[in-house]
Image (cartoon, rainbow, N blue to C red; front, side, top):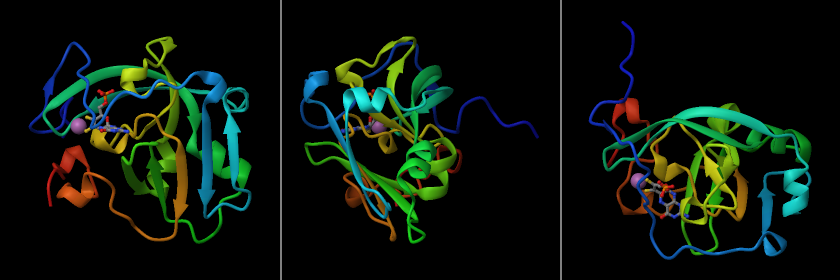
Length: 185
Ligand SMILES: Nc1nc2c(c(=O)[nH]1)N[C@H]1C(S)=C(S)[C@@H](COP(=O)(O)O)O[C@H]1N2
Ligand SMILES: [Mo]
């Protein structure tokens, strides 16, 4: 059977709702940094121009928030996690990837999924990603509920064990698969 266009319990939104805890950080590109660490052979901190010099990938994907809205056909552009893992050397122990913002929001996804579809996105719909949607750079893991797509990502950590992030410590399902409605534990 062909699968439905949107996961169960979701409704399509035309706009783009804003959803986050805390305030919107405004980071000028010259001050922006991202730290890549944990189970990596060559941990690194990248500045904006270094990040933009990495190979860029375009992804078209739907975006599903656990509160019930789905935003279809988003065009994202950024750097694949797979590219970062290859370039900076994944340690064999790595099993998960944790994304964190500077304000205490974090979330973790399985390594295989991060490598197959994870993006550090800095453009959406052909324009720079707006700061309220996580710009300059947010994580994107489109096949999971949108709380797994960490806005204002400042740290990417490769982990050898599973970890619970901000919402997962508050009862959200760490799997976060919208097709299985992995909403709450
Ligand atoms: N840093 C950070 N990232 C976050 C959140 C947050 O509170 N802080 N909220 C998550 C949730 S619950 C959703 S639905 C999406 C919403 O992204 P949007 O505001 O761009 O629609 O961001 C996710 N990423
Ligand atoms: Mo959400």
